Amino acid sequence: MTASRPGFRLDGATCLITSAGRGIGREAAPAFADAGAAVAAGDIDPASAKATAEAIEAAGGRAQAVALDVTEAASVAAAAEEAARLGGGRLDILVNTGSTRSAGSTCSSSRSSPVPR
Image (cartoon, rainbow, N blue to C red; front, top):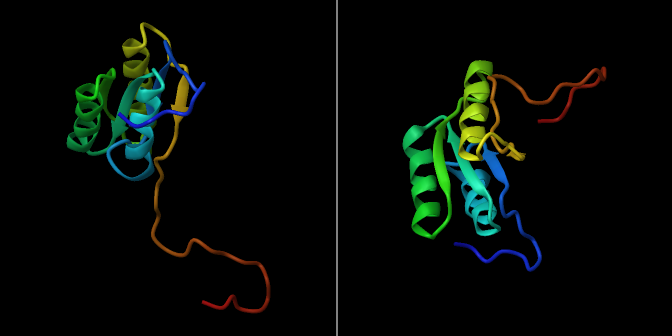
């Protein structure tokens, strides 16, 4: 596992991390586990979520892969329920690193002059 910050302990806590299969979520998941939390590793890609959970468990932590599509309310609710089961009925922490991306510009302006691109 990764080295946790001295004094930063989450023993007994359960957290759900979105997009735990890659990027920031993949880096955050073992850090939370190292601090003592049980980690529900959520990702839209089940294989990526499983790889993260397996890496945490191989390092001595407690984790579970969770299928999670942050664009679907039913998926989010199901993931939260699975995470709470991992925690014996409690979900203490949500780390939301998941996002959605829509087609088109991410910048809009109401100015009359065009925005340089």
